[in-house]
Length: 77
Image 1 (spheres, rainbow, N blue to C red):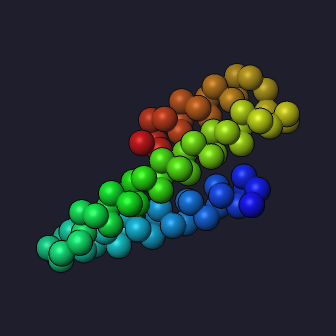
Image 2 (image 1 turned 60 degrees about the vertical axis):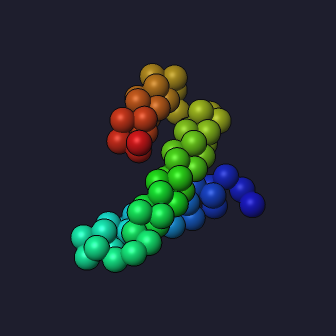
C-alpha cells in the first residue's frame, strides 16, 4: 500500500468517524466518546502520513514545506 492511499483513506475514515461521533454526542448516544477518540487517532495518522508525503516531494520547495507543516499542525490537531 503506497503513502497516497494511506493519506486518502485515513482522511475519509477520520472525517466519517468524527462526524458520526459528534452527531452521536449531540444525541447523547452511548459509544460516542470512543468513536471520537478513534476518529482523532485516525486524524493523527492522516496528519503524519500527509506530512511525510509533503516532505518527500521533490516538486515543493522548502518554504512551502514549512508552511504545509505549520498548517497541518495547527489545523490537523
